[in-house]
Length: 390
Image (cartoon, rainbow, N blue to C red; front, side):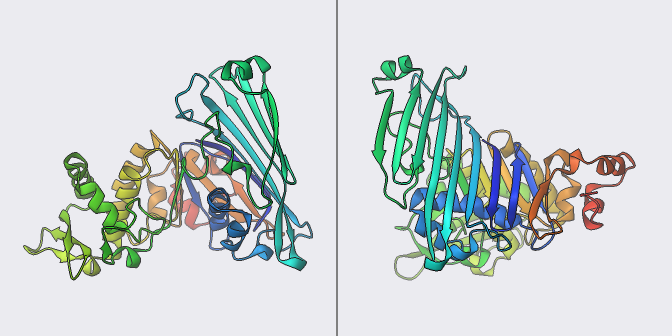
């Protein structure tokens, strides 16, 4: 579970530190910086999966990594993770990981380089041991404390190795101690595109749900192969959409298959291309929350309420709370209806300061917001009237 994230000079953030809980509802006006907060996680994920150049390119290019109003050519991302799973089941389980990364942008050459990076892993429930992995330039050093723990693990207490210039220590961190891959294995990010999710597909394709749900049909086909999972899927969908009786994956021309839905109004199933975007969004949400990446400890979703009716949102919030009891949820929204069913301590408000930098506030910590709530003003009203930051 992600406990804390610091963003220094990254995109629209000058210097902001965000503390996270189990359920985190990120809200704010258009262009406030909500997406830039999510982009920090994408950057770290892409850095882990690929390398620094790839991660920078996915952000629109190196010139957009640092705050546009800053003369500083470096940015820093720092995160603290408290692990629920503890990584692999070894005698020394990873309880907490602190990761810090500083990158320099060379705008004249459209280049980026890692200045320094560190990863500190605490082992054991009582913090009995610590692994320090530090990188400066192309050289990384490893230190295990106390040395007696290194002896027990059959590892040297200190070591040094070279890293490719564009590689992160995150790509090498697991090695013998099985430090989890924080931003790939333990993190899932979704930003659904319903039109893409409606398309037909080949069953030979990847079946773990993509970020945009473009392979929703393949993911559903995998779920439907297991009777218990299929039954659970149908029950969850009927809870959110009572008119949706069943789903099936049907063959069409060639080796392609398409998603079809049976609605209570009609005898014949209809293809996904005729379903509303809201219906497809709900199906993708259920697959993402209950049937994808079971090892993920943190799930990020951009605007899961898009195209959904207020009645559906009330039921959706109930399911989100159920999921948040076993894994961390972070999602963005503009919906006052979501806030009708939210608790003030779950809210993170992103807004711009006078200099254009994004800041993150917790409305629960603001005295005026508490006063409004005591006087029976709902969160949805405070949000619409721009009173959550007072």
